[in-house]
View 1 (cartoon, rainbow, N blue to C red):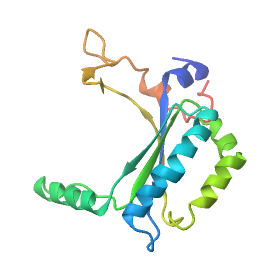
View 2: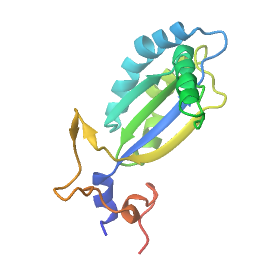
View 3: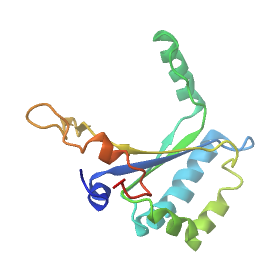
View 4: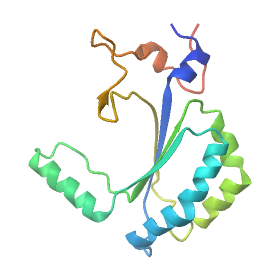
Length: 165
């Protein structure tokens, strides 16, 4: 089994935060704020703390409606989330997060969100990423058709704890 430090270099973690806009804020204003005022500054701060990638997925009402229609066509088997945007953070080691949260620039940036982003019902998740298609090509699969990722027992060790002895 891979050791804990080895897994940190092999396993890419993704944390998502799904946000709703404040009711007084339009979708267009939220997008403008998120892209022009927030993301460009956040990217610099996140990179400084070791983030490998940072992205925002926008889910306006028109897209949620299209998702509901697709779901209906496919038998209504999905739960369609209704948040307005999801922020994605990609990193190898959760130990970078406390430093990021304590960064005065990050705290000042979060304070600017008040009129735009609701602090209610934020959904958070953390997991690891396994990529199998990149730039239209199959990746991380060996010549025998098997994934090249470590086994579940190594990958599933909580990212903030050493593996069991």
